[in-house]
Length: 241
Ligand code: ATP
Image 1 (cartoon, rainbow, N blue to C red):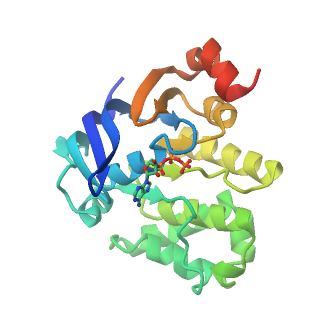
Image 2 (image 1 turned 120 degrees about the vertical axis):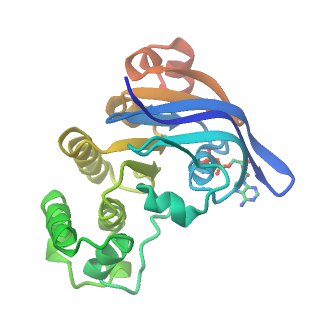
């Protein structure tokens, strides 16, 4: 399986405080990889490290199609331009802008205007509620709709890799099921690789192909999702049966 991304001995720091300790993980091209873990394990920090928003040491290589590029030391803007789109925790939509303007902003690095218009149409097909609300201010959308907008805005980059931070957070189960069904569709039909960070292990393991379990900034376990699902310690601690 071709690797899209590989982190080796990745550490991350907030000031003098180290929160990731020499972790290794990889993302296969075209697949969904998930990072699970309890509160404070370092999941969000891992995504921030990938975007170079926190101080990191170690190595992170992205296969851009034209060879491997080292991400450590690059600017966040440069990483976005390589096709890494981040849907942060708290969603990060521009609340005073309309749905449509949020989507346009997602494509800010692109110059292929016709393709951008097509991709906006594709987002509206994936999430018809956004089409109905295209002129509405993002801040007045429901939580679920804001999450749909955040994912769509990231898709407008036409990403090679989509980073998703707890897309289920604070949403009703029916909305979560809808969003996860569409994430599966985006991966299967559009071939977008994903790194999904989730506290809801059951949801994440049902969607992802491969999983890593983080415990206090180290990788405690990793493997195909089916295998992790059947691990007794994971079942007891994270799946609740
Ligand atoms: P959660 O699901 O609660 O967000 P997480 O696994 O995503 O948990 P992180 O947010 O990555 O965990 O946090 C890892 C550790 O880093 C925690 O101990 C947290 O207190 C600390 N931390 C997170 N953000 C900062 C920050 N801005 N400054 C200092 N420490 C931070």
